[in-house]
Image (cartoon, rainbow, N blue to C red; front, side, top):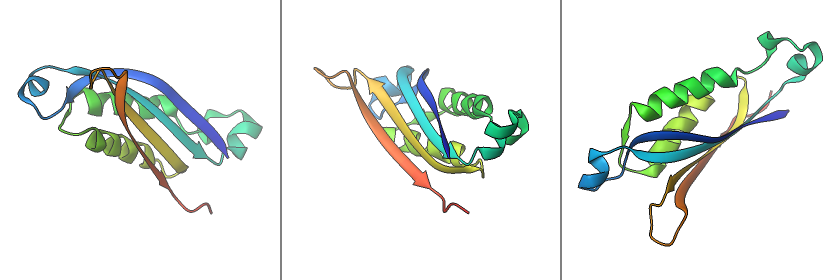
Length: 119
């Protein structure tokens, strides 16, 4: 197994349920970690055998920036669903931070994960 990390993807979206939050986009920071069996990719150095993290990132950007979310939990779950659409991925974890969501705190985050049986 190999683990790929997409670190600190900084996006803007509508997140929150109060009136002000629904009127203006806010920053979110997304971290994704996923694992897949990469023996063929590592041995051959051939992109055909690798999971394309650029494609995954583009889909995350599109969904987040074009979406509206009341809860961090929902945003994190939707990002996880996008990652797990790749059948080669056996495990994924997503953390979504909402900077400055609370006074005296750097951020509030939601983390979700999913796992498939390895065959």
